Length: 386
Ligand SMILES: Cc1ncc(COP(=O)(O)O)c(C=O)c1O
Image (cartoon, rainbow, N blue to C red; front, side, top):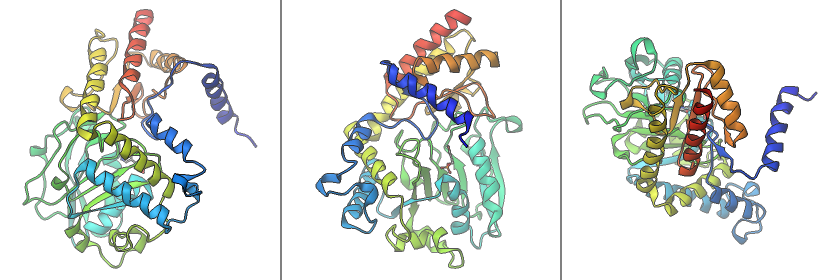
């Protein structure tokens, strides 16, 4: 039987989409906006990839055609992030959530503890999952704000790390709560390796891969569609991967089988490769970082310049440039804001259920024009209801 809830939410969207000539800006936190040029290339190549006569979706993952797609995706990612040769790159399935457990299963074997920094929804979930398999306990090395209210970030100097822990885990950008470390954290060489959830900020700004032991990122924000997770791991850490964990959860298995231990997520990898190439045409990470800085400044200036009508509750030094959370002083007005914005083509601005208010996710593929359209609407809304 059809679900009436789903029907009613889909039909108005499609009708508006067909009838409207105004641009649609997608502020979803993920799966999120993709560059239009990428979607057009994918459309063009849908039935026949590069003259092969094959749709990418129907290629064997072991065919030369797909192996070439995978190879180029990896090379382009390496170029964009300047990944050193002693780091391996994997395109895995299971989302960033699977990495909460895989990191612990692979890197904490034989260790008594893992240090976890908790600064929001995702790093909290990771810290809860990490001790479930294996003997390592999780120490909370630092947490964000008073009573875990996630309004500020603990300084790296204040992380309480034990030198003999397996690794230190943190999320550099908290998608739900709208916090981001503005200076990319790093630890001294005598400290355990840093393991970082970069799901909602990878490729948005420059950083030094060599400061990390392992980086993981679900694709569906700055990389491509959902269904693939990038893992970048320093090769000496592979020695830690134990033999007695299931092969599919073992990083070493995937490396030894060149990413072909089981069927990889072929189409999302192809799409991610297109996004990497698009980013290269934009001038790479350094160039997109400048645009991202401008977009974030434009939006925070609008919030701060609203005389308190719009509020961003995050400490200024911890504000995310990817996920901007804001609200008015009334939940009713917030609801109306989201509804009216939707009619103006400013879509999916509703805040996460535990946070409420609004959240504008302004990843790499969101053009400055989208942020400017949002700011114009915010000012108009304030004139009418402020
Ligand atoms: C920072 C962060 N970590 C982890 C996740 C979980 O990702 P997935 O749903 O792909 O497992 C998300 C999802 O939004 C996220 O934003």
